[in-house]
Image (tube, rainbow, N blue to C red; front, side):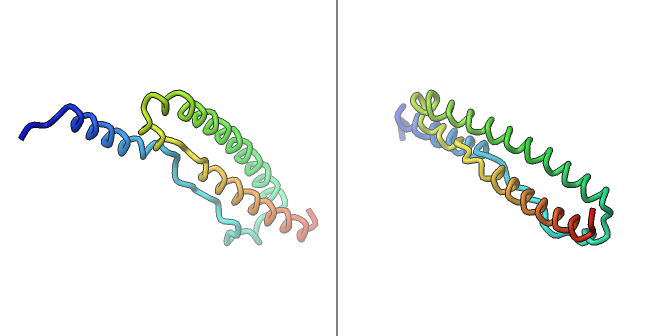
Length: 118
């Protein structure tokens, strides 16, 4: 049985596309909105976590902007010359999920701070 060049190229393209599929983003790691020790936190601890969450949200926005820039590169140039590379297109879902969970967490922490008259 003889294998043609078209079959080899087709198998190579499918293999590369499968390998690049792992490059398309990362799994989300959202924070828990309600945590067991929330009611025991002091005003200082609540404010500290709020500030830390704000920092994390800013990092996620920068990461999301970086992902969008990478997607533009993939869609514009690379996909034209090698269409299977489109499997590397990252929709930024992980960043969006994490950002929403941090926003909800901050709402919860703010409500706790108001309840404690911080």
